[in-house]
Image 1 (cartoon, rainbow, N blue to C red):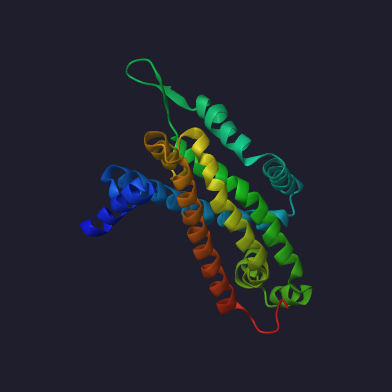
Image 2 (cartoon, rainbow, N blue to C red):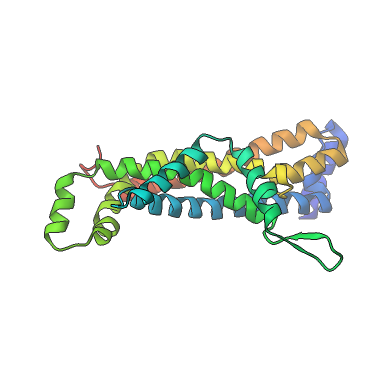
Length: 247
């Protein structure tokens, strides 16, 4: 394996292409940790935002006007404000209110910057997911819901067992686009010093003055990451498609 890393050192000596993330163990470890952090942010935020979308779409059909209004204003807030501003709002605004005093009298945050990034990204993408699932629910034929109710299904059982599985199939293409957007939006966590790919790359190019090379590395890394997500989502979409439904 060492000969593989040494090849990149020789490449640098011969052409000036300075890929320290391959031949320098310290930079390699830094970049690998950034990749893992980006994957962690993306995976947790994807799962949380989908759950928010499912619950929010359910609450939109509530018989209580207050509940519907809460969901409505949640969607308006997170859809109509920039995600970077939302991250700052959570980290500097709410985060400052949740700090405790350390042993030396300095404020110690209860919620870390990584956790605030996950919260912010999840709520941001979740607001779009609520509307995506709502459109899918509205596309389910009313006769299907009436049939479930005639069999004695409660509103919750009808939603979980019949309506949502059908709505999810319809919503999957739009959901795919939103989740791709979410993965790319994780770069904004850089603003609150979350050590994801962009953050660690900026440290690497500051130390080695290889900005163009690291920019290209980032471009390729995100292309591969997002491409893998799109491929997996398209495979899933084909696997659960119901012939003749939603077309």
